[in-house]
Figure 1: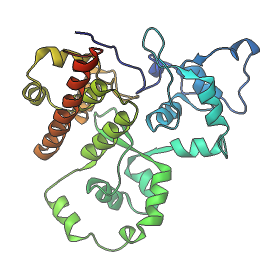
Figure 2: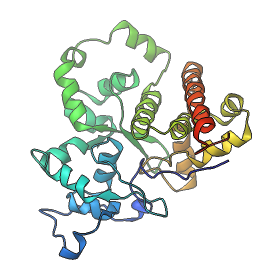
Figure 3: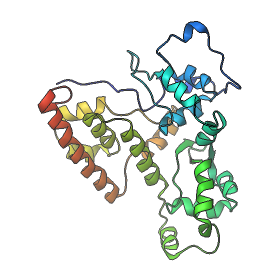
Figure 4: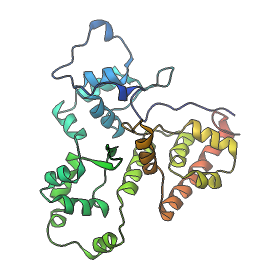
Length: 289
């Protein structure tokens, strides 16, 4: 059985969270001896694009910046051709910063839409607005992050939802204390990860990572396959807390919970594993054969 390590495409290089969140203003000054490098790490790439580390991580998450082949240790690297491509986009760097700008919490997000925090919370909890990330505050509460550009687009596209009373469907969800934000975020997160790889085993690992442990054991009874999936599992999202108490709260966001959501991921995993097993039989390149 051959097991490949994580490809590194999902997030910027390791150690990103320990670096200061500082933007390099103005055009980046690049030494002549660096221009010959074929790829650079996440910290340098962020600086050359004039982004903070958090903004750069968001650009990678959204597929705006694509990682190249990883370093020998598995850390993500970014080719100069890719950085040049991003820099050559119309409106750089302002357009790029606008694409990755996030706001946090119902008060600020509601302000972008021109509505009250309460109305924004209802729209988000009922699934009309999808978070792009999260952080855990000092009280171990989840604070959702939203793309500012998406909020503005929502205001222009769904202006009627910003006024008047809640529709019956929303009232039913609120009465049942349903909160679709975790589920909507998971769907977005998984979709973005799947878009970054065509490898069948890596795609199966992304889907497996969302299932609770007991469900995964049922879905994949072969321990050898579970080892492969664990080795290829994507790391937690950028900004995932390191403090154990906060990490425990965030970990619950990474796992599917409603039965119908779990069923969807199990069905998708079954389909992905069929393709992955077929690849192993034909090439022997990855996973049990």
